[in-house]
Image (cartoon, rainbow, N blue to C red; front, side):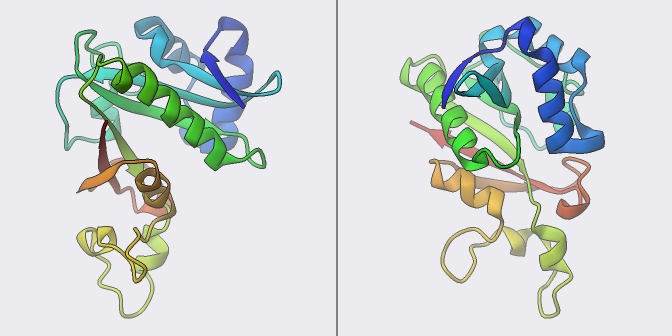
Amino acid sequence: MKVRKLQTTDLDCVIKIEQTAWGVNAASAEMIASRARNFGEGSIVVLEGERVVGYAAAQLTEHLSTGSWSEQTDGGLITRTHMPAGRLAYGVSMSALPGVGGKGVAWHVITHYARIFLETGRCDSMCVGSRLPGFARWSATPGNSGTLSDYLRSGTDARPRDPELRLYTANGFQILWGLPDYYPDPKSLDAGAMLLRRE
């Protein structure tokens, strides 16, 4: 797999990837184009051979937030939230086609962003708000408290309970705090978590 900047010819492929990964919450063509227009360097695709199998977008900002994804990303457009001089890279979106190694796509995206933002000294840190697709199931299990703060505590093997949190922490991120009403996702009970990585 390799990573390169999003090109206009990638748009149809990226829309399909978004729709497959996110369904009704997929980024629209307008959102994808707006992200690339506002911060082209942050809009990337992951290729398997010559086939586009993943997409990600980032913006620069100046501070961590406890707001919802929509508040932090200007509804996904990043027109008002991208700060060109910001020292904090925020992951706006990441998606991959099923069956092509989603974890591999994530690793390539995170590695690429770490290289262009952290290793160059352009940013002090990277952050991402993660959904929590295991939260609803865990909350419904008898004996569990159902609270977000308990869910974010490590599981019995000292790793995060949630699969997405395990992915990010395995790639150098640390969990900072929970984000109630972060993103509309029934599996997450709409909750999320803010994570941070420093080089």
